[in-house]
Length: 304
Image (cartoon, rainbow, N blue to C red; front, side):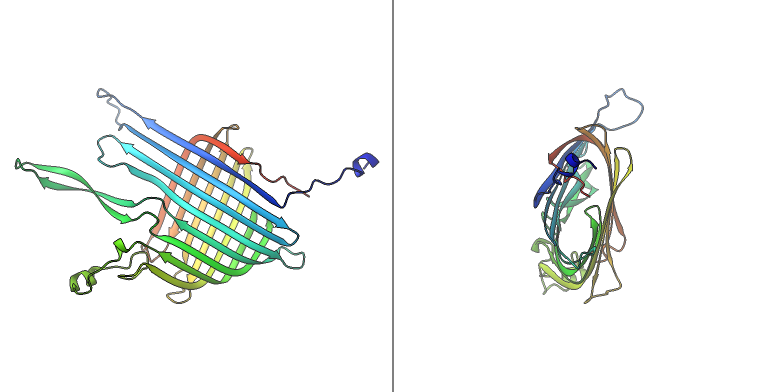
């Protein structure tokens, strides 16, 4: 190393940094009356925003990530607009490094919910005033705006090799599930209604919250699969000490990001959720798209 090179001071990262991304995916198909190849005219769009805030000073680190994803679809001859994806999530981890190792004492906070109601769609026969029977499209509300909402707070240990490779174990975790009373109100004087009621996302009749105490795990990896292709994996586990601790809630997200150029990107997203308070099977969500993106702020540069 030359004397000139030796005199150059190292680049110092600021304590506060933030960066993010806005993406929009639009799909549209149209067919005229003479088209014989099959297909239905439709239009859909997805808007996604992710934003990171990072603070680091000596042994203290604080990482916060906001994820929003919302999409709608309209298909010809369908009565209702349907949502294709609806996600709102905030993750925050406060860590304090232990003896210059990868381990940190940690406090975690997680919030998950949705923006608008979810519906189950079906058809039924209806007889009109003219005496004719018609098939009518109907829908039934299965979840509400911000109902359910999950709040989770935990104390534990964070192993953090880098911002792209870390996991957190929180043996002391509390979780609050909040729902709208529209889904849990039951007339206790009606034995049929009482017998028919099933806990809504685990919340009992005539209540709007469910309080749990348990343990949680969250692992995160992000790496480059090939040039301009990145893979992100997020695995979250939760066990409730107070009710069936062997039934572990699972939330797994796989994201593939493809960079075409500065403004055009592709992505593949896969999510699998298991929560026996909601349903007895895996909930699966998949999104594939090519659209526009815009970076917010600047990602932190790699340092030695």
